[in-house]
Length: 20
Image (cartoon, rainbow, N blue to C red; front, side, top):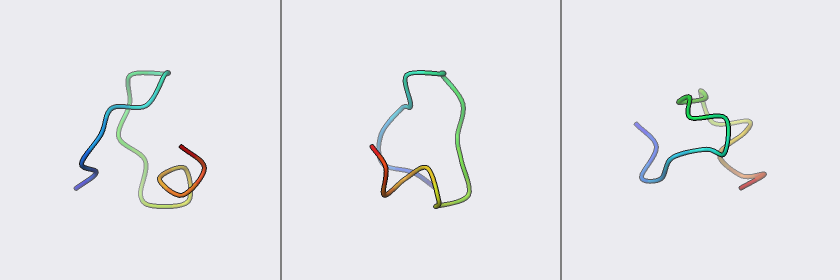
């Protein structure tokens, strides 16, 4: 869903997505 990979290497539901 996310167009990018988090530093944690996991795909959040969206809450972390806006944190980027």
